[in-house]
Structure formats: C-alpha cells, structure tokens
Length: 122
Length: 161
Image (cartoon, rainbow over all chains, first blue to last red; front, side, top):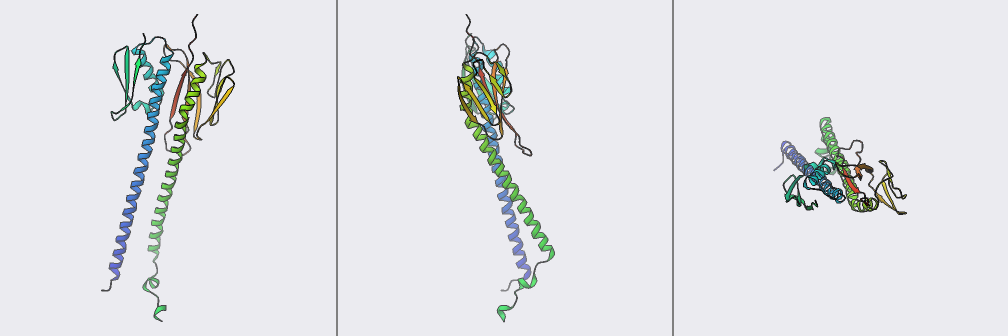
C-alpha cells in the first residue's frame, strides 16, 4: 500500500493544474464582471446624454414663438450630435401629426428610452 | 533516534529548476493580482466620480436655468465665466461651480476628474442660448473614455413693444 514517488508527483501535478484552472476561471469571471459593470456605466452615461439632448431640445423650443415639425427635428438632431458620441447610438422615431409630434428615443437594442410629446404651435 | 531521522522531504530539498518554476508562477500570480487590484480600484474610483457628477447634475441644471431664464442676454461669456448686466454671474473655479443670482451665491462641487465650461451658441433661426458643458478629464494612462454633458439654458425672450 505504499505510494511510489512517481504517483505522488503526478497527484501533486494534478492539484497544481486544477488550482491553476480554478484560478483562471475565477480571473475570467472577475474580468467579465468588471467589463459588464464598465459597460453599464457607459450605458448610464449615454442614457443621461440622450435625455439631456431631449431636455435641451425642449428648452430651445420653449423660447421659439413659432416652430413646425421640421424645426423640432432640426433642433433635436442638432442637440443629439452636439451632446456627444455616445448619444449618437440612439435612434429617434417620430410619430403623430405635425401639430402634435411624439418623439420616441430608442436604444440600440430597440427598447424605448423615452417618449415625449412635442406640441408644435404654428 | 527515529524521531530525529530526517524525512524524505528534508533530505531531498528543492532543485534549482523547481525553485525557478515556483518563483515564476508566484511572479505571474502576483502580477495578475496587482493588475486586478489596480484595475478594480480605478474602476471603483471612476464609478464613484461618475455617480457624483450625475447626482449633482439636476441641482446644477436647476440653478443654471434659474439664472439664465431671468435674463435676456449675457454681458460677457468666456469658457470660465458668464457675467450678466445686473452683476449676476456663473463661474467655474477648478472643481467648483458658482452661480451668483441677485446677490445670492450657490456653489456646487464637481468630482476631481470633472471640469465645466460655458459657451454661447446659436442654432439656425434661433436666438442665442447659453450652454454649460460638464466634462470628464482623462487622467494620464487611464484607458477609460471621457464624456461630457450639455446643459442648455435659454434667455428670457425680450418683450416686444
């Protein structure tokens, strides 16, 4: 029942290999989690930039006495471009009539970020 | 005497190759651990600063718009300061924003990695408006992307006689 030197060595080698594999697995989990958190952070910033673009659009429109749907779209596109590169990944969708526009801002995955009615006093 | 008999472990010792391999593995593990530690701590710091900046944005936006909405034009606009005719102003000093509105000053602390700047812009067919831009600053050797937030404030429309 004695253990030979060779089998002892191979058992230790298995332990080492298993330990290294476990370490690599844990490291990979850590890196993936960190990258996910980082991406969520960027997404939160992008959401805030896009919301700021909508808010800034309404702010600029508020002081214009008369504007039409084309002006609303122009101001919003201008704000979206000026707000930063992250917000460009959002897709605006316009619904409603020219008098009562509804701006829907979609994320890259197609989900709605915000839906805002924009009345257009002619 | 059998208790004092050296075991096989002590008799054998380590070879130079074993020692070198062990030191190499230890070095790799230490390197990876340090990398994870610094990466994680930098990420935590940037997340905290981003959260601090995003948390202060609504208050800054409210104070900024209250200041500009009550006025029809700015006397002087630079990237660091906006002056109005009634001695009201908005200025940025390092990481602090100051809004002086009718003699009352409010200040907001920005995170260490953030700055602010003012500008006056004009759209096509629009009256000029003021923009407060909150920017994050890229630290040396930092891989994270910088970003900025625009806060537009429109002047009060002038009354037409």
